[in-house]
Structures are given as structure tokens and as C-alpha cells.
Figure (cartoon, rainbow, N blue to C red):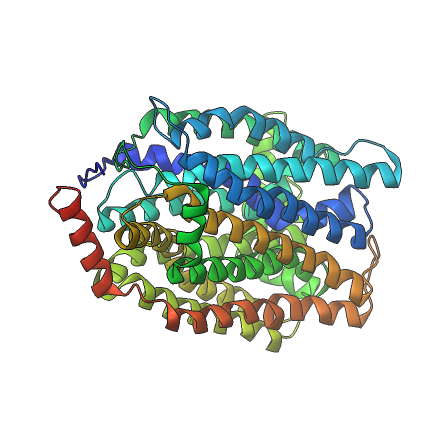
Length: 491
């Protein structure tokens, strides 16, 4: 085994993080808007949309991910094992992103087939890109503290992408499409596809793989899979990742319906006016009109404005939380910090069930607190997975980074599929009528439960599972030291 535990340069950390920014321009779009896009823009029935999101995620992500992990671990090029995949998938990722958010007029059945095919292919290419990208973080350096730092950089980039999607995408869609959401989504995804492709190339050019298996290391697929099923921390991280992304997809996909159907529009408009937001957007309208662009639409639509600020406040404080993640993890260990912060974030989610439609200020403050506490956990989930790869090498004297990281991506995809499908399924069960001016009380109540009680359950189960995760602060130090000695490096 060869390794290098040197500190990573700021340039390499930024270059690596741009890959996550690129991927999340797409990922955050289908977490936040896919159910809405299918039901209200592409006009697919909610039941069919639920099936597409679930089965597309299972086939494209869950089934393909372990296969991709085995392929990536056995890839050998002069550029390394994982960097080439970031380059090879850059253009296909962009093309499929555009196709998945296009709205051809094919009739209802044709639309369902089109959505299923394009979404499944997008999830497959996402796995082929993002699993090697994630595994790359485990081989850039063997220094666990540097991994914590790298994770913080990359998830600031994730938060930038999330801010763009959850705060700016809806008004951007309205502006680019001049009020036509189908046209707006297509133009926005064209921009994201081009930017994302460029960023993937930058990631490839600015990173270098340093933690490499011994040239003579050979392992069969059976040995790799046997190592996995005997790796208790890996099994726990798989379960935790699935549960985390069920909650993220469920609450993320439900927020737009929450603002459209639950939050009182008059109270929301009064809140926006009271904080000076409407005047600010009025100035932006004048600016955009002056340079020949369409109207920004926000002043006329309190839902778009409120939805954007709600998400924006949460994201800004997620970035603040990420800043606390590394020092807290270095002092108390990743597991302990992750568990406490996740529990506090969960309590904020539960609080939403008690708020009235007119409690706009309280709703926004709770979202800010939730964002801060959840932000602390964001880098740790991925850094813990890199630790699990080290744990496997420490136990088995064989390194299989990509198949270990397949837990993260497999869990992400399965959680995304379940959580995203739950959004559409709950709408269907409670009787949601797309395009209706006003939903019946049962639908409104179901939407409120989706972002609070239902979304909290997976997070609470994660907190319980962490009691069985054995890689605490002391074990992190022991693994790093012993692996450093084996590799002939000073930890």
C-alpha cells in the first residue's frame, strides 16, 4: 500500500469541491422539484410519478451502484482509479440532465415511458460519476483531519448548489420561460449541464490520487463482498445513509407543496413586506428589465418568494454549521458530533407540526435552526464513510475504496427513491388534485405531516443506530496510526 498523508492544497480542495457543485445542480433539482415537475409541469398523474421516482431510483441507482463500485475498484489507468470516471461521465451527465427535464408532447402514456427512461438513465450516469467521485475523497490523502477539512470544502460547494436550486431556480424558471415553467426548466437545465460539464473537467485536472493499493493486491469479487457483509460499521453507514436521504427527499420534495397549500399567503406577503424583501425584488425587476431580460416574478408571487427565502435561510445556516463540523469532530469524534447534531435537527423538524399557517416568522426561524444543526452533520456522513474504508483495510489488509463508498451512493439513491416516491404517494393517498386552486383539508394536513412527523422518523432511527457504530474518536486515532505504520508513513 502506498500513501501520502500530506496536507492538501486549497486549490486541490476547491477543485475537488467543484465536482460536487456540478453534481448537485442536478441532484438538488430532482430532490426538490422532481415530484412537482412531473405532476404540475409535465402533467403526469401523481401515482405514476411516484412509481417512476421509486423504480427509476431502484433500477438506476440501487441495482447499478454495487456493480459500479466493483468496476471502479478494478479500474487502472495512468490517471488513477477514480478520477477518469469523473471525466468520462461529464458530457453524458449533462445531456441526460437536459433530457430528463424536457417536456415532449407524447400523450399521457408516452410521457410516463419517457420520464421513466430518462430518469433511470440519469440515475445510472449519476452513479457512474458520483460513486468514483466520492471514493476519490478517500484516496486524496490518508490524513483523517485533512479528510474532515476536504469534506467541509466540498459541502460548502454543495450548499452553494443547494442555494441556487432551492432559492433561485423557481424564479429563474419563471424568468427564463417568461412564465412558462416547461420552457424555463429546459433552459435552466441547459445552463446547469454546460456549467456542470466544465466543473467536472476542472475536478479531474486539479486532483491526484495518493492512497493506492499495493500493486500485487488482488481480490476477487467474492472476497470484496464478503469483507463488506462482515464490516459492521459499513452496514450501519448503509442504513444511516438510506434513512438520511429518505428524510431529505421527503421534506425537500414536500416544501413546495407546503408553501403552495398550507402557509397563509396573506401572512406570507405581509412577512415579506415587513422584512423589506418586496422592495429589494422590485429593484431587481428594474435591473433585469433594463438589460432586456424577463420580469423576475417574485413580487407578484409570495409563494415563490417565501419558498426561496425559507430555503435560503436554511442553506446559509447550513454553511455556518459546516464551519463548526471539523473543529467539533476533531475534538469529540465524528460519531458523537453527528448524533447530537442530527437529534437537534430532528427536533426542529418535529416542531413544524405545531405551527399555524399564519406563524410565518416562527416557521422561518425554525428552518434556520434546522439548517444550522443539520449543516454540522453534512461533511461527517461522507468523512465517516472514508473512515469505514480505512477500517476495512485495517481489519482485512485489503483496500477496496469504491465498493465501500458504494454504500453511500447506494443508500443515497435508495433513500432518494423512497423519499421522492413518498412525496408523490402521500399526495395521491391524501387526494391531491393537481392544478386545483385550493386543496381539501385532508391534503393540506397530509402535506404538513410529511415535512414534520413523517420526515422526522428516519432521522430518529439514525440517532438510535449510531449507538452501535464503533468507530469513535479513540478508534479513529488507532486506525490512522496503525495504517500509517503499515504503509511506512508517519501519521
